[in-house]
Image (cartoon, rainbow, N blue to C red; front, top):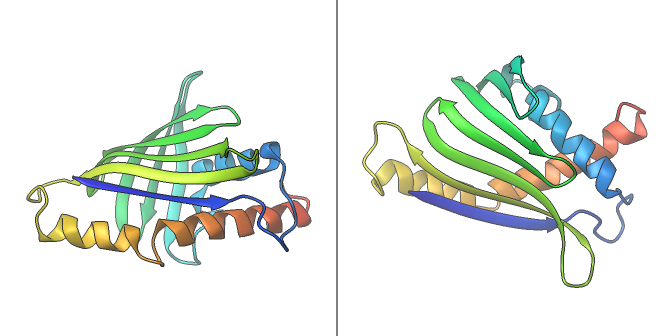
Length: 157
């Protein structure tokens, strides 16, 4: 089983401040169309194929892998990606919260397994190491916030 977590401040010193609503808009937009947030060419397809009052379903091709994810939104707070089809099974969560000092934070955490692979085997250990690396999900959180600021500056948020 893979468990990984990373937390970054939404408004580090020197960056254009984002309100909770603006940060939330970025997270929701990323959930609906990852192509806007991932490096060029990494996500070649991302379509919402079903929508209900409680969730939506997106189908995407990311890194050459076809995915189907059931996504729930807890307004202004949390996006949960349930991995229905693809190499991973489990959940990935992006959460906005205030820390003890009242500063807005963005946290990623996941509980995942790899379909068809040995639990805690070499593939899962490699995936764990990637998630926890400097180029893992912490970098993804920072790039999400950067892209949110860019979209806001362009008037597209």
